[in-house]
Image (cartoon, rainbow, N blue to C red):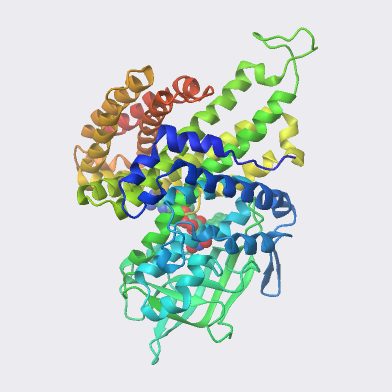
Length: 564
Ligand SMILES: Cc1cc2nc3c(=O)[nH]c(=O)nc-3n(C[C@H](O)[C@H](O)[C@H](O)COP(=O)(O)OP(=O)(O)OC[C@H]3O[C@@H](n4cnc5c(N)ncnc54)[C@H](O)[C@@H]3O)c2cc1C
């Protein structure tokens, strides 16, 4: 079974030829010195080497041996700790951190690529550092000076890992139901009691300390989300003593065996408030948003990993005669020559490449929203991120699972047995549709909070930006994207129609998200084609992905008509 191989040149093409990130970075004073493709390529080459040589080879043991629980402790799979120690000591978690906090101050897009590759190479291992950047931002922007002194640098560097403790047995999508209590103490700290479940990396031996960020409720707080506050509780306090945070067990799961999913008990554990009382979700927002993007990249990466395996296999495996390209010197042709197999493979490329364009553009917009000198441009970037993040999370995790299943099909029976490792990707990828807000919740977030809340104004502005970007591109792909934009705009006018129409939209929120996805993909493929993207992805998008648009628009329109 071959381990995942990062391809820096593929990424370079998208960053420098399709998106021209060097031009965007040149406009940001804080990052202009990094607007040099050669320098960025060097970082990518090094990252690719680390991922391919250190992290990817551990993937199989992560699945087969996995994380093991014994007496409150978790031992990670062989090699995981050493790889993690090498990872943070080489400075990878601090890639885009502020130099004032020990970070390297590089563009966020490099971190995106790094995490996409890490997820492709070893999803289980990557769960641990995947939350670091969000935790760093959360502590940096919301913690007290004293907490920052004790924790910020350690989390920024990755020396200490972090968790996000939200879910409880009765509180999943609905965090307003959280019951964990935080009682104020005379010394200004809080005493936390309650049980959190499904906590990724709640306990492990990768790092010497773990910093838990915990949503809990103060005694006099109102019910619901407005009564939630955020607290920091470490595994070990600065004086070396252990906190009363206990890992009760780890879950037995369908996949992702390399990542311990922990039940964590807070037995009157001492912690400290992060942000203002009652503003826990607000303080956690940066972390949750970073985590959502991270999960979207898991989708892109896992799909690429599945495609890489299936493509390699399809070139070697010979069965039956191909209708068009028969090799008379062989008794049978490689299965990649069968149009149905080719279609399965090319469809995944259509998704991976468009996903990369959209995810990397989102990373650039993160930096634009932070550093651009023009306030209007910063606001436009924030608008893009708000709309595109739920779309990327839901659609690319959906495709990672369904596309990995299609890639398994390319192997026939050999995909169903363990030898080739494709069945692991199908099992591992499934959870990305569930955590960080299920994909249904993402769809509702997009439609009700991002689009209907402002009567579609933000979405229309983003569509206008895309339309402008397509002007001057004289291609079938650009014409397709423009027609999609017009159809979405048309549908939007009906969607924002009235209260009755809006209620009838609940069951089709996912279809609405899919329409937005397809239109964004059409824009991405117009851009990819304009840069002369190699391969069959463009054709596959036009033939096998784009026709879904009419069906989804039909479903949304039908829901509206039914309500009137
Ligand atoms: C491997 C793994 C790792 C995880 N890691 C973490 C972690 O590190 N930290 C953490 O806090 N949590 C973590 N989680 C928890 C995860 O975020 C939750 O499982 C998820 O938010 C869904 O909550 P739930 O499982 O309780 O499902 P529920 O909320 O009970 O939902 C059940 C179903 O109902 C649907 N549903 C619920 N409400 C609505 C609605 N309003 N509209 C439409 N559909 C709805 C959901 O989409 C879902 O299909 C993890 C989970 C797993 C499996």
